[in-house]
Image (cartoon, rainbow, N blue to C red):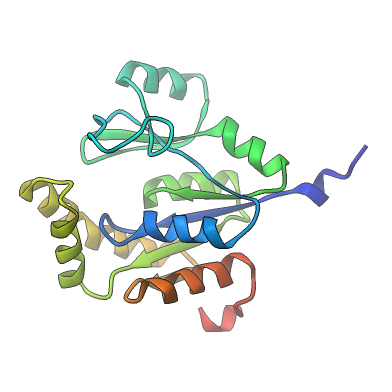
Length: 196
């Protein structure tokens, strides 16, 4: 029988306001590190024309989402901008048992729930260089209507304020490669805690 602690994986929680570059940073981390599993969240929001079910999100009905909550099949869940989002528990646990680094790209509400389950989780919050830069990024990505983008921007300051209370690592995404380098150093434990 093998010692399960030898294969124990690592949970990395990566959060930040909409438009800050979380998805791009996650893709780069996966490209640079071995044995990484990016958890695919489940959502009740409609799928956009460019999104793929199972790759970008698992798109489900509100009824199915509620059934998963009732059965305890979600690691965390939250209602964000009128839609439900959650992390399927089974894939996370399976990847951890395989000794993988599991990245949860989730919001602050979900991160607090996940941290309660995985107290050793590495928590990284991605910050924009400025509110103006974040507004420009939201406008350029073209996913949201002007009203939705404004709601997301208004929510960003609350999310950032909450993050300062719960996250050990804060990374500013002014230069993408530098932000990715910092995240990789934090995950691989090659950055001293004194520099946080």
